[in-house]
Length: 88
Ligand SMILES: [Zn+2]
Image (cartoon, rainbow, N blue to C red; front, side, top):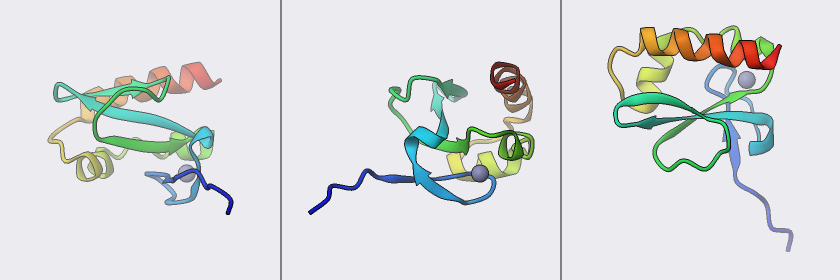
């Protein structure tokens, strides 16, 4: 038996894969945070580490639904700016 690692699915394209292909985001104290080290507890959302998905991730509704949060538009915009800067 091969032990398979749990797969994640991308918030934007719904594609699946091992967690090494993803960036993780979590809700901490009602704030959306980028979990750079994949070690924060809490409800998480995943996004592919590629511009194709990052650039389409600005739709706050997707996040609000996935993470059961309200009105994260401002936080999300700032966070994505940081992520895209880091990735480029
Ligand atoms: Zn994706």
